Image (cartoon, rainbow, N blue to C red; front, side, top):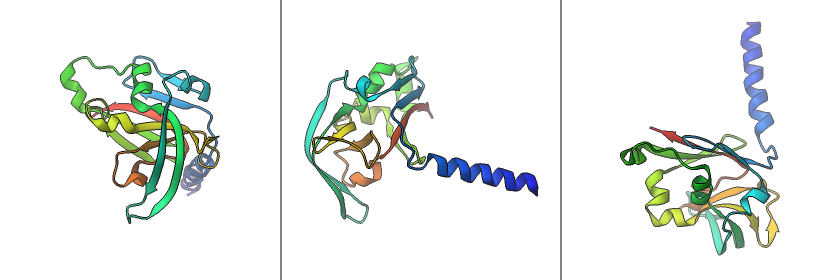
Length: 166
């Protein structure tokens, strides 16, 4: 009984200590040649993309947030820096990119969705909204600007990017 209580406590402690935790880095791992831990300064060495008028839309169709302007980098540029491992081009269809927040909220993109589709040109890791560093939702967040329901893949407190094979 005591062991069960300790395990439950460890589970809840881990859950609550990561929720909303401020992270100043993004860790990239999995099927990559170079596992990376990137800071804001590291991200700014990649080509910066700017955009205007982004709306976070919930599954009910409500507008949850609006960004007049934003700046960030393409997720594909981060993945190119880490160099995804692919032994055979036919394996690309089995690759999934998982994007995870500090509270374990996770969203996924297929390799082909990011690299062979216009969607990939609008999946961004943001570090600035409305001409200010992101504060409330963590220093980094991810958006997929071409999604109809943008809130489903709006990842606040972005902390980890994992490349996995199905």
